[in-house]
Length: 438
Image 1: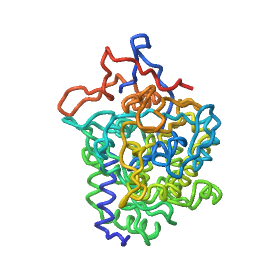
Image 2: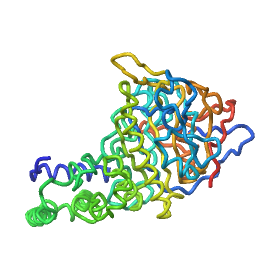
Image 3: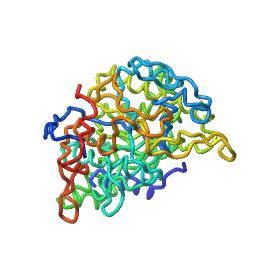
Image 4: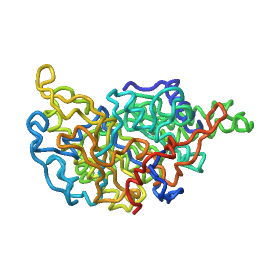
């Protein structure tokens, strides 16, 4: 990354300052009308961009035959009776008493854009553009709710999801702050904030000089209408050069901890996610690419699955040891699964296509009961056979775990209320709450 000019530097600070200023649950007729709200405070979402294969992770079918299981023809037991994982997820299997696995996610959509929007908002696209979970939580747990942190309440490591507008009709104020860069590199440069190769002392010196020359800012401080802009500028500089920015610096993290997570982008991003939650940030997304495996699926998974196993198990273990797991929801999954039937012929050479009819999601902490799994698929993992769970069911449950009633509404800019999650028809059958509150 090239050194920032004064104009680039101030533009980055202004953009950040602008950001700083800037469900259905499935209750039936016999279920309580007002669900018990949980006490979770934060969410770490590990988004497996492209769609991980449920059959090769949390819903293995080793007896399905070579055209379905391929070389992954074995499964390992977990600490939870009746629950098996891919052998490459051995560390997660050993802590399944802390995990809630949903094996029956479904939405029947096989397009990345539509599926991503649906899984992140709980709604099908069309007409109104709804905000995603992170934006909604940013609204209810962010600055409007008394959030005082300089760090924005919705962070993405490292790239935006890129398939839809995360903030929807809520607008730019609720978009996530995407760090860019690569946490596996040392030092980790948050793009657009820290100028690579320019020391903090040098940047502070430049700011002090600018402060002396900035007669306009002195006028801003005397004008209430402009004073907020000055405060936002100070906040932006604090994130650039102050204590807040140190959260992104892993140089003070013990080497043993960094090794435990894995010295790669996913592992180091998970460390920063934990640090952000410790600092009070309510929503963090770790965007992990590489799961859209149309070609050479099994070769890719030989590396990707152990990496995922190491990073997610370390995150959950770390949160638990620090007393944060009870108040932090860990949500790991993608927009859909992969096709159970393998495409062996070239150019796919053992690839898997998109599959929204059945897929798996891992949940942990924040009121989701460990040692639990929900739903079943058929013997080839093609279709849900027991207790289908739709994205809106899961999102509504997450909101309730965070103390956001799924009946709550948000005011649309056009002046009418919109429910945070699509209401379920009154005559619909009950799916029930996914899990008991711990």
